[in-house]
Amino acid sequence: MRSSLDSAGIYAGAVTTSTRATGWLAALCGLIAAAVTLAVAELIAVFVGAEASPLFAVGAWVIDLVPGGFKTIVIDLFGTADKAVLLIVLGLIVTAAAAWAGWLEFRRPPWGTVILVVVSGIAVFAVLTRAGAGVFSALPTVVGMVTGALVLRAAIRRLHRWRDATDGGQRVTAGIDRRSFVLYSALAAAAAVVVGTGSRMVNAGSAAVHSVRDALRLPAPASAAPEVPAGAELALDGLSPYITPNGQFYRIDTALQVPAVDPNTWKLRIHGLVDHEVELTWAELLDLPLIEHVATLSCVSNEVGGDLIGNALWLGYPIRELLKRAGPQSGADMVLSHSVDGWTAGTPLDVLQDAGTEAILAVGMNGTPLPIEHGFPVRMVVPGLYGYVSATKWVTELEVTRFADAMGYWTDKGWSAKGPIKTESRIDTPRAGAGVSAGSVAVAGVAWAPHTGITGVEVRVDGGEWRQARLADSASADTWRQWVYEWDAPAGGHELSVRATDASGYTQTSSEAPPAPDGATGWHTVSVTVH
Ligand SMILES: Nc1nc2c(c(=O)[nH]1)N[C@H]1C(S)=C(S)[C@@H](COP(=O)(O)O)O[C@H]1N2
Ligand SMILES: [Mo]
Image 1 (tube, rainbow, N blue to C red):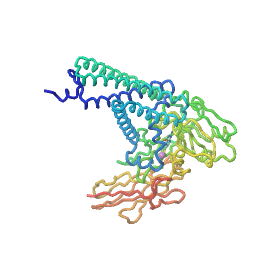
Image 2: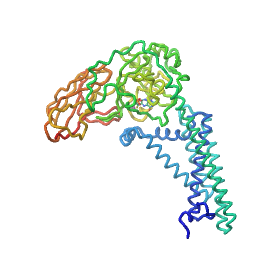
Image 3: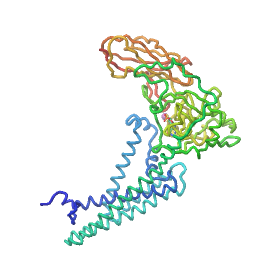
Image 4: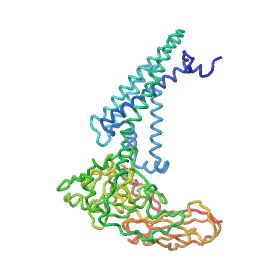
């Protein structure tokens, strides 16, 4: 009696292989060849430079290709898991292509090899579009491709021999050929896994940078921020804390692989329309009189009621002082900040030069060095502007230029060139859809108009009269403020809305706008049930 394993021809006693099993084994050869290609590419990238690794270059390239409006759609769908989703989708596509290549190489050589070369060619193209790519950046993928192709052909050759011996009824030869095929494939697969994961870890470089960061002690600020007033924190259940802990701070960036920047080799270059180019090392930056400042950072993609916003205590050095050293030339009106990964933001020069705006080159966040995913070792923080036009993480260059001559990453994809944060407010508690007991209910949330300041928050129940909420204190106009409204809640279903007024006298409009191109507007409204 033949077991199903036997018919697959791959259990220990079987020396023959059925047609169906052969097809699957050919596909497996394709997968092994793909693994070898990637592993060899990672290995060579260890020497050529991590940005030359095809794996993340392809993902990063796809992210850059995605049209601007899609940014919000992706964030809506997957939250901040968008990157994991992208990697999984790419992984599935590569797996399918690899299996198909193996099968084709068996049936219609050399078409499997052709697929491998075409897919690798796309990867080479992706690598060459990355920031900091040179001609040598193509080397890892090309060497990987050649090795992968050789392995594919060698494995398929062994599979053919086994198949032919099976067809010819030569059991003894089939046994030998089978062993040769299994041994070769297993060795190639194992080598790919070991070399690939090892090299990937080196390329990610994160281990090394993590330990540098862990060992780091930031200097005390020359001017400490005044204590956050005790009255800034209402400490209500369900209300966002005034200071957002680092672990809860939202994260938005296009980096598939968090850049690993060693502070000891980090440098900032200020160039462009300046009288003197300025270069600043990490040691020089830490020697400057650092300041502390509490500021709220928000993403332009934040929907009304969304959570892509946080408030932190930043430690850093005012950018205006560095610009003074460089001496911007007349005609310049924008600073294009560049991240090590090629991402850019265009910030108005006058905002960065303004003595009343604490725009800083930040090294610390809430008393620790910047978390790696929040821009370690150095990022920008500019009170009052959305992150996409100001908050460059892993920043290495400030290019003084003109809005007429240059564009930040998202502006090039249809978002506004200028991005002041819009006055907004959010109900944190009760949550939408929540059930609460009748009687006194604390309706509370946060409101923000960074750099302008919030002067009033009103709450309305079921479209009735607007009632003043009580505002908590804040460290400065650069941060959000908590608010609370004591509601005497009657039983039934109710709708709560909030709107804020800022220090310029502007009250939030009811008119609803989507995040693109310059930030969402509208009143946050939640429905609750009172028992
Ligand atoms: N290098 C780099 N910096 C970046 C971005 C990015 O994609 N790459 N995204 C910006 C955007 S859109 C926002 S809203 C803020 C978010 O900062 P956070 O992740 O620390 O909250 O970072 C900004 N800085
Ligand atoms: Mo953003």
